[in-house]
Image (cartoon, rainbow, N blue to C red; front, side):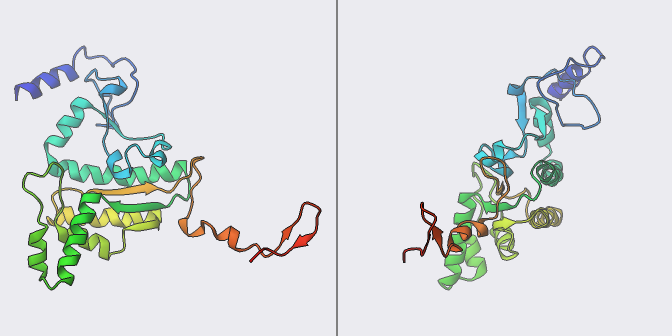
Length: 234
């Protein structure tokens, strides 16, 4: 309690508006942060792990919800409320990406370790194990370094066809809304480790992986350096 009182005192110190900083803390969109933590090194990009964190496509996105360190620590203290807030921030980020790169599609994937748990579960089922037996073999570890979702949650995400390439904004929003329902119903206590990677090339142009390589297949004739039409070699 003493630390919280200390932080509140710092928040209200001086009573006047804080000096402009290097970033805007998004803890409260309608109030100015008064913790005094105004430099980028004290900011937290709170949902970037769900968008590829430091991958090249993610670095193209210029607008992210940033929290100062103190407000991030305070926000995550109540995990149930924080998970609900993460859902809102992720949905908001889809709109931000769409505004910056209209028509962006996504590659949706589980974190490698979660993908491995789901694959192990499927192999055990194929080998004759019951769902309960297979689920028990890949149950979340009690002392896991990172959150592990119940395998039935991961399985439902897969069965609803939320994973894979070329997912539209509507499809990724549906995936997050389903996860929100899972949180509400108690099927999972946290947002699973799932990534929504924007399909953007180095210049920031959205692309569809189904279109890659199609142009080369359409060529039926070529023009030589002298202007003559030649047939492509077989």
